[in-house]
Length: 295
Image (cartoon, rainbow, N blue to C red; front, top):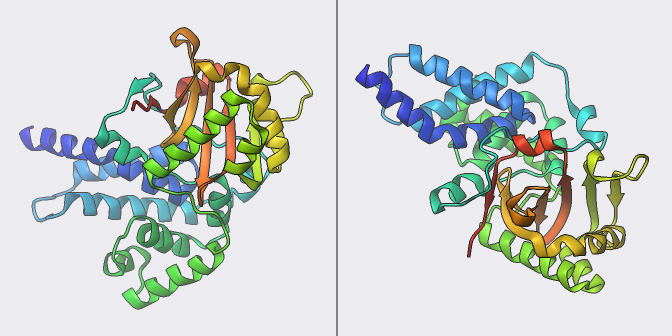
C-alpha cells in the first residue's frame, strides 16, 4: 500500500507533462486524458522496482499508448479544418493565482495551425517529432517505441520537421507571451487600432464561440484589420479583463466582480498573435483550465 501510494504521488506530479505529450500526439484533449489514464493503469500493474527514471518510463508508456491510438483511428484532420474551436482541457476551472511550478507545467502550448500540420504526419513521424523536438527525448529512447533504430527514428523526426517548417510554432516562453498579451490588452483599453495591428499577425484568425454572438453572426474572422476592428468592440469589457493562463498558454479572462463571462485563448508566435479563441459557453468555460496571472 505504501509503494502504491508513492507511485500515485509520482504519477500525479507527472500528469501535466504526460497530458501535454498525449495532446500533441493525439490532437484531442479527451483522448489525451484517456491515454494518461491508460498509463496509470499500466503503472499500477507493472513491476517498477528496476525503473530508475519513472518520469521517462511514463513518457515512454504514454508514447506507446498514443501511437497505438493513432494507428487504430482515422484521420481527424477534417475536424480541425472546419473552423471549430479547439477542444478545451478538462480541469480545475477556478480562476486562481498561479504558482511558479504550475506556470512551468502549463506554459508550453500548441496552436491549432500547428496541430493541423501534425495531423498530416504518419503516426511514427508525429511521435518522433513530438517527443524529440517538443520534449527533448533522445532518439535512443524514441527508437524502441516506434520499433526502429535510433538513426531511423531521427529520420522520422527530420521528415516531420520538413512538413512542419513554415508553420508558426507557438512561443513557449511565458514572459514573452505575457508581454504580447499586455500590449494587446493595452491597445484594446486605449482603442488603438494601429497598436492592435502591431501585435497581430497579418493572417491572424479570430474564432468566436457561438454563444457569444447573435444568431447568424460571423464566428470566424480572418486578417489583422478585421480582427483588430472586432477587438475594438471588445474594449468596453477590457477594464474587467485580466491576463490568465487559458489551457496552458497566456490569454485573458473577462470576470467582472469575479463572475467569469469570457475566456480568450491566444496563440502567439514570433511576437505576434496568430489565433484568438473567444469562449463564452458556460459548459465550455466550466471545462477550461484557467489561472489568473499575477504580477
